[in-house]
Image 1 (cartoon, rainbow, N blue to C red):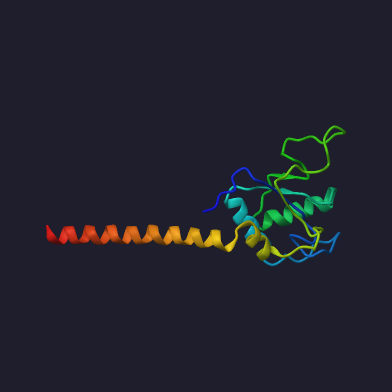
Image 2: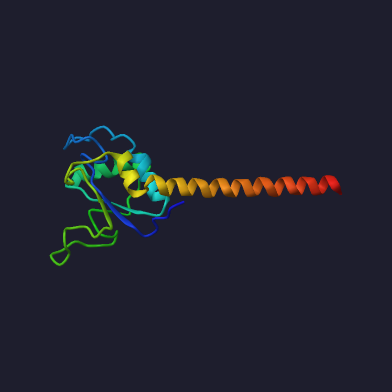
Length: 149
């Protein structure tokens, strides 16, 4: 499995995780939570980076929580950060996922392919198959030895 341990990914909410219906919460974008859950599982630190504040922000965070996503931080670089005039408003992340990118939001399926190109996924699958074949071969040899004994 390709690891993302320690990689910080800043993710926008409106227009990225959900359809843009601000100030309401839009419908989930196809594969949004599935992709975010997999990124989290691979060790990424997900940061919600959104225009929302106050009650609207709380609603967005709760919506994500109900869909299985607990963000590492929300509109902050790390959970304990206390924003003041010495802290930049820009989130310090390794990757930004936002519908305001040049060219717009490509969709979560495309995001996955950008982060994990097919060739990498194919190599991962080949490793799993090779491991499975070795295990099957070991079991067969073991069975033959027991039969011969």
